[in-house]
Image (cartoon, rainbow, N blue to C red; front, side, top):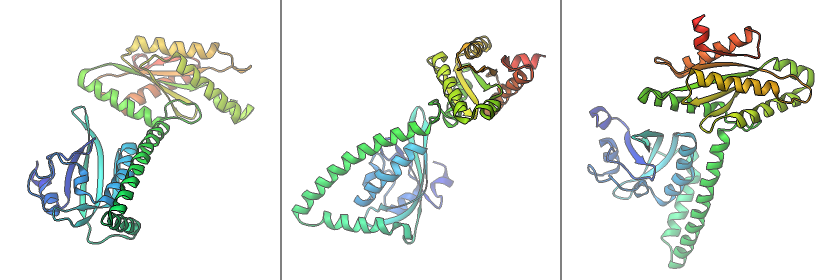
Length: 328
């Protein structure tokens, strides 16, 4: 470990997705908790948490970081080697290294609890008193723990549903802009590693504002939903169709080169033109771009967007590839 990180003015440690502590805890954290080097390695994170904070960790910290990928300014108490509770301010981030997920955390020692922790402290005191009470109370606690485990599983299931909802556009049912950006970054990384090609389409409904102004937003929403259904039916199994915003849609096409993406774009364009729109004439303009050396997420989207503008300015209801536009 880097010497500066090892003696940083805050504790640092990493855990696996299963909650096991790695051997990367820095000297600051070890001193905070009273452990020697490597004493924490391969132990579960629960081993340095009190019972109340285990519940807090599994109820708030772990589900939150699974859903959002990070936790900021969360207050809890670590259990020192001699059994004391050490209040800390915890930040965490979920990262992938070598194909595995890890959670990197920093802990800043706090001198006293803040107002927001009073409820947690009260719960901790009650739970610890119950834990040290009579055998009958211990039996009741075990039953409560079993009930908690069942509710925790339900919470994880609900969190999985929330994560799916967080990546879905509510009107069209397609993936949303956030999911598109994450997928684009993944494809960009794969291209940087092994030059695996991919292409991007940006599709825009022609004269959509006129449709809204003339027929109202309910009709406009129906057009958006119908176009989304057409994109789903025409997209390949690996393609990622998403609503980019307003009347703009995007399609990521892993493995598609310039010829392949143009063919797909023409298929989308012709499909929209030929579809029945309840007496309306609906067309789309399409801009396409294929990844090339030196591209970033932003430059690829910009090139596809410029190609879309060329399709619009060229008369609409047409497809333009960024390379073709650049060759003019």
